[in-house]
Image 1 (cartoon, rainbow, N blue to C red):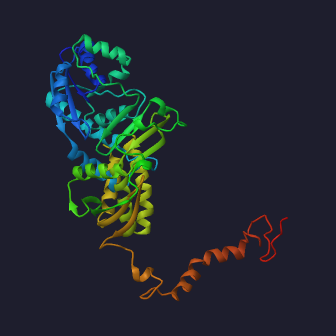
Image 2: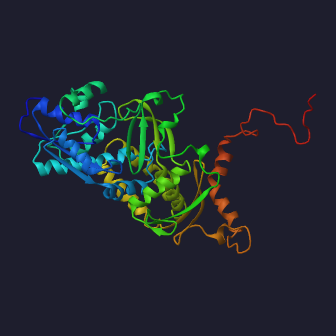
Image 3: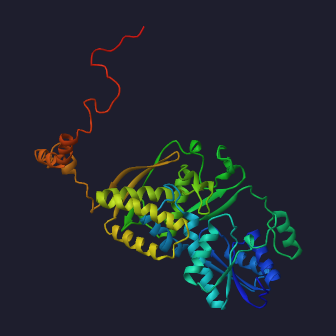
Length: 423
């Protein structure tokens, strides 16, 4: 890239060592004026301290935003309504945060009249794709710079020396052996000893959840209410999304709920071992599916599971801002019209179990399901149903005789009452 002296670059800034060094590196390498943007999705902490650190690192301007509410409303809740779990388990915490951060990058770039944006992702992970594609969809004219894959290849010690030489604040805390990313919806941990899939995660990996073996022996029951697929209260107390998630993270984490140890397939083509902590996400996904089981038809549930897998794949692969997502989201929104009701869950030593559910829109009917008094099911009608349902099977059996008399079982089963004695 040629000299860009005087141009403005908007950098996604976390406040960590990598992005702090990147501020100075972008200025020195390309002559860029750097404006940082920090979006708090539930992990940044003191926003003013982050802003001051960015300025001390050499930023011309530092924008800090509390983005927790829009993160929950426009990203977390739609993914929950979709039942989106990547490869059946990962609730997509980091993946859901990146498109919002990409939008903040673009918004500030437009305010600044900038032609360049930058992020601190490496060339090996998924986040680079999410940032790059998010920016490409929202502002295809902007150029993306990723210092960690474009020449700023330093070891941690080299970064520290680089920072000290330029008066950039350096963290004095002990370096964690893990790579960690977190927001309201979950915490992702990788690297270090976790790269060996045979090794059990050390205790210091976990920060939000207690070891299930050390969790309270007495289970706790909670009730979550949904309105059109969105959680609106906990134990009868109405709550906004951010507060509800924070409360559930604390409550469920205390009972050891929310640990996920997963081998997953990254978009770049490699498998990685990921540890996740997502107490609120695990509880809410479990509860949401329980209320859907009660109110959605068999056909809707079957198709929605396929849509959930597609939706999760799309989010994981950085395609939030795509027409395909808009189409899937429209279907998901339609399915949530009647997903209103309450779910009771029991939290006990690492497990969140559904123990009750109710809804005015329930398709479950006690009078049809019961085997006791009040049974309104027409048992006699079942004969005609089976006759028609099995018509094609019986016709095929007569014409083609697909199965022999022993039903394809190669073993001769012993007759009842003639068991072979053993000595």
